[in-house]
Image (tube, rainbow over all chains, first blue to last red; front, side, top):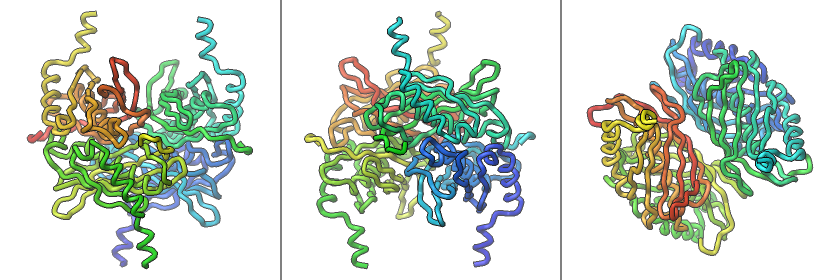
Length: 152
Length: 152
Length: 152
Length: 152
């Protein structure tokens, strides 16, 4: 059991490089998003619902929903990448299933198929109100592992 | 020729309802995006590159790129919808072709196939520097036309 | 327990209309595919690997993989549709994760989000050899429920 | 002008390796598809409409439509790849815009963005009757260039 839990933990190094990379994303800070969970192959990001992230009907904008979904999937892949690499999104597809509403929304990116060059992730976004979660978007994403450039 | 030009113009009513809807999108204002062109079946949105919309390497974040692409496609469809309807994104897919950099990025949504219920749009995003445009993302989007609810 | 099992069964009417529709698909017969399981919101289709369905390296062609994935998702949605309706694929996206090889491949279409007009399915395809299953493709699909036309 | 036309021609070597690869695809022969045009970055494939490729309403099955679209995009990319490489589809997304009907359908794959590792193509499928072409499907595809293995 202890071992299993250990296997579900990322190393402090990985956690550090992901938090560090996230903190350099101007958009995440500007939207008010934060990393809420980092596991091997799975990352959660939370975005409080507030007027700055809405679409015309007051729900969270698909663009904000997608932004945290894409970011969660990218870092989920990044937990499995070697040192001295960086991660880029090749493409993603997202279905918006229901209005994104709640106190906050939460994106969960999960690696479906890791690879040396390409990694495929599943993306889910939930609307959360009073602890109740409702699936509001689901997607699929392809990422590429690149050698780290000095400036990254 | 005059007729053709006329045909390329949306009516003031359509322009008004799109600008009005756009202005109610908290996210667009928060990102600093603006509608730059509204034609029948085609809408452009411009987003200045600034620290608030970046990813970890200083390029415009895929989430911001996607947000304006999705919005441009949605309003491109909306130019062709009847009064008393609203538009929702069903799904979209986007390929990120190159780092989104420049003075600003510009999204162009274009209706490929209009429909009574579903409309399909092509999405393009360009990085623009000193007037030079470079394609940085391309996508495909499905939208649905819904009867307008009293609160929309 | 009994109730639960009952809930996992489609009615004979639904099973009949799906098998009947499947049997009218010239492509499925021509490829050699067959319906292997019909549950509420989930359908399996099996395709034996044979030279008629290969790509240039001898694996099952992505087109054949996609054909049974699309069909499995379509009928998964159709299990939940009312009588006198038909189902059409609006769009799908599929990632090919590994070479599709084995004695046969098996597609599983599962409804993620049912809807009155639009339904979203998850698509999975497995390569199966000697009972061992390996995920070779994963996708996401949007379907529309239409009133049945007299000729359908 | 002559130069321009020359630039629109693939070399006999490229034409040969594409035709050769196509001929090894059991599925294309089984469906009755043929390569109808090979240009740098663009390939056309034609599929006669016949009972063996239909869905339940007698139209060409989305699976057959997708199969030739995917193949056309793959070879369009392959026209631009170096010798001793092979091409694999990473993923694609396709919208089915209208029933695929006609004497035959024609898929056109066009490279949107070539790359050393990844190439992105636009996919279009037309229903053709008496020379009239109607767009029935549109898609977007990501391909990867791999070193050729001895057996490929």
